[in-house]
Length: 271
Length: 271
Image (cartoon, rainbow over all chains, first blue to last red):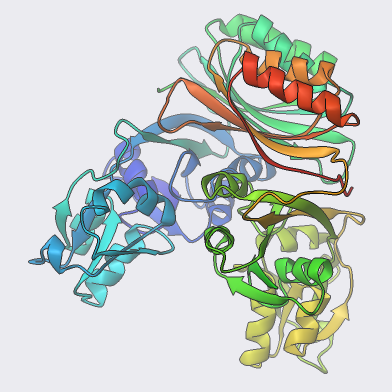
C-alpha cells in the first residue's frame, strides 16, 4: 500500500501515515500538498494524508480547495497530539546551544520553555523535521531543532527536552484521502461539505439556521469566492450530527433551497 | 518609506507595492509572510502588503492569523487584476519551448491556452517570478515561465503571449498593513474583524442573523479553533455596510451578546 504525504521522514505527516497505516505501508514524500492530491488522483498512491487544522505545517487551510479540485474523498480523520521536542547532536547540553531553529509556529508554541535560556537565539526555518535532518547531515554543533521524537530517531539526534510546548492536550487534525468513495460499514456522524450559494443578503445566516434546526453542528467553516461567478460564494463546512437520516434530509433540503452541495466525505468523528 | 513584501522583484506582491506606494518607496523582500508581519510590527517597515484572497501565492488564508498574532492593523485593501504572461529568453518562439514552469495555480489558470501546444510540458514550481529569474540567470533555453509583465521586464525576458489566463476580469485581493491604527478622513464601509464566541449550539447562525438584520453583509468568513480553549471558536470575518453608525452599534451588541470582537481595520471597499 502506498501513502502520499507532504514532507520528509520525521515530519508530522510521516508520523500520521505510520500511526494510521502501520509500518508495512510505503510512504511516498512530496514537496507540496498539490503533489499529494495529484498522486492520489492519478492512482500513484492509494491514500493521502493531509493536515487540515491547527497544524504547524503552515498552509493548511487551502487544502480543501485541493480536495475539491482533484475530486478526492475524505475517508477518515485523525488527531495527532502536538509534541515538540528539543534535539541536537549527541553529547551536547542545552547550555551549549547558541540557536534553535524550527517552523515559526513551533517556536511560538515553545517560547515559554526557551525564556529560561536567554542565550539561545530562536530562528525561523521552513519546517521542523528538515532542520533535524540538516543538523545531522552537516554535523551542526550548537544548533538545536524543535521536531518530533520520530525525527530525532530517524536522524540520530539526542532529545534534550521532551514535550516543551506550553499548551498541553493540543492536537493537529489530519484527513485521510482517497480517489474513490469507499463503502463504509458504519454510520457516519461527521461530514465535509462544499455548499455553493447565491450571494443574496443574509443567505449564510439562513443556511446555518436551517443546519442548526436540523441538528447539524458546525465544526469548521471557510468561505471562498467562486472564481468564474463573482456573485456566488462557496463554503467549505465540516458538520457533526447524531442522526444520519436527519443529516441526509438536511442535505437534500439545502440542495433545493440554497444551491449545490458536494459531499467530500462522511466519516466518524475521532475527537 | 519602507514596504515589506513576500517574494522577489516581479512577484505579485512587488507589483502591488509599486502600484499602491509608487516608485519612490523602498520595497523590502521577505521569504515568508510571517517575516512581513514581524517587520511591520518591529517598525523595520512602515507598511506591509499581503495577499488575502484568490491569489496564486498559495498560502494566503492563514494571513489573518498573522495579523491577529502580531497585532497589526488593516489600513486598506487593493485588487490586482490577474494577468499571466508566457515569457522566455529573448529570440525564442513558443514552438521551441519544451516546458513551462510556474506555480500550480498559475498553470491551472492557463491550461486552456497550452492545450494548443501539446508538446510543451507543464511543470509545477514554487512560484511565478522566481522561475523568470532562474531562466534569466541560468540562461535556460527551451523553458518558459508564466509570470507578470513586471517580471519579464526586470529579468530581461521576452513576452511570447500576454494575458493567457482563461478567466478574464479576475482579481487577487491584497491588504495594506500597518503597526498602528491611523486616523482616517473618510467614513469606512468595510471592516475586518475577529469574533470569539462560546461553542453553544447554533451560535454562529444567531451571530450572522444579527449581522444581517443590522445591514452588515458578509464577504468573508473563516473559523479557527481557539488553541488554549477547546470549547471556543473564533471567526475572521470581513463585512461591508452602508451605515457606519449602525455598524458601530452592531459591534457593541455583538460584544455584549456573543463575545469578544477585535477590529483589525475599518476601510473603504475598493471593489
